[in-house]
Length: 377
Image 1 (cartoon, rainbow, N blue to C red):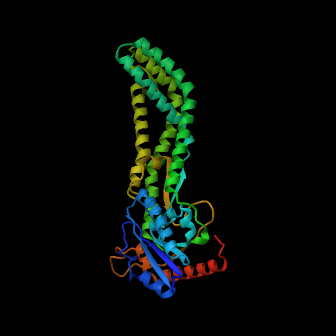
Image 2: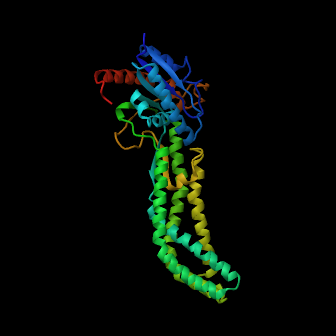
Image 3: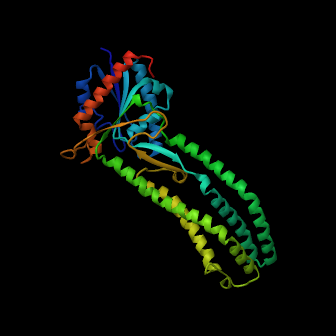
């Protein structure tokens, strides 16, 4: 008899089709027992913990779903995905044909990826002034090193005029460039919105992986927050000290010692070095937040973490329908096995009877609704 249900199984990070996806697993036995005329299809992907691997797998899964629909055109097609396999399943929904072919998606312990654009306009003026300041100081230092003091002093005054004229244009260019880059990152990382009626989210109470990732999001965000505070400090203190700094540079052209000039109690050398160190620390902290994140999300582009807030949550943070998660009190496995990868509730969710009951009931109920309303999308 023809299959009524086709269930595509998608494994998660660092897993393969030999675990809960394999024939004879608890999940497959339970669904076979609870659903009639059921056919399983196992989708394999690299399992690497990178956004690139998941988006690539999503495109491959879309083709896999389309092929399954051609093979079983009259069946109801469902996707059951564990962990980051849920994100792979959502990425597959970018394909309209695959989206239409799927009746529903069930995720097991998925940490859903989300992206949020940072407010780049807040500190754009600081970075534009710093860029212009460095561009103006380099010729000044070179001219002064060759004892071309009058030329250096003339260049300094001309550069100050150019900085005032060019800063608004540079700031606008920086903002526009960042906005375009943010749009590209959102298009690459953010899963598409999926109707709440087509997505069942099943979670384990005390899920270790989801909790660890959310904790690491906070840890990795801390350096960025500190860096932004320092950038804001530079933006406030810099203009206050700009006349003093220009006076310091002017006096250096006539070989007056910087120690004779004090700004807020500090001599010129100490203040100049301090500002340079502060800017360096800002850059290290802001850029370093991306390096810290690699422990949770391997291989992310460094710039993505500077321009975007990228994290994970138990439900998708997308526009459209409001999703809800069904949480189960999944006990720790009695002993480590290959399928559970040790004592983790995160992996034991695929071995839990209550989860399998909810999964099969949702598939059965969703199929009946589809039969009654064949035009419902």
